[in-house]
Image (cartoon, rainbow, N blue to C red; front, side, top):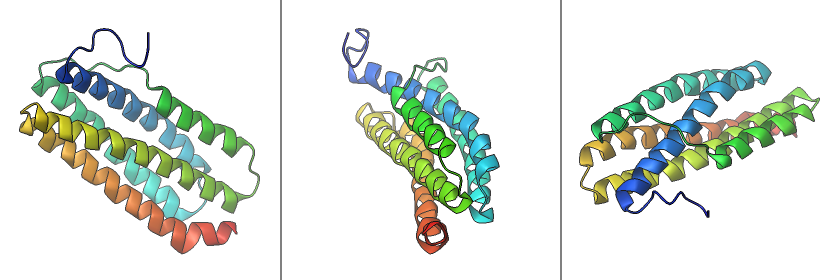
Length: 167
């Protein structure tokens, strides 16, 4: 059928579908992060991934709150985008023997995840506001702010240490 199911007939339907997409993505990320923590060798990178795992768990809880606020049960729908990002990171990591290069690859994969999440949460915040759901928008904005902060931290870590060591 195309990009979306035939059940999406309104912006509200699209909002719920995208919540389900992000809910799936966050749960996949929560499963992937422990593997990334294990593979990371730079202490700051490992610590950043551990912090992000705790944040991801909080973001899952927030999404569950938004579902409830919006009158829906939490439900995940497959997100091929996040599956592809995670699969690509696994494939690339399997091809790298040098630990500093591995850290750079893990960091790059984490930033790809962050950019996806930033795009999704930004859209959800805008749609929630358009739908008159400022309460939902405020909860989603918290996750968007966390994702942006994580991306800034990853960029700083890449530029100040990880990429230099990998070179």
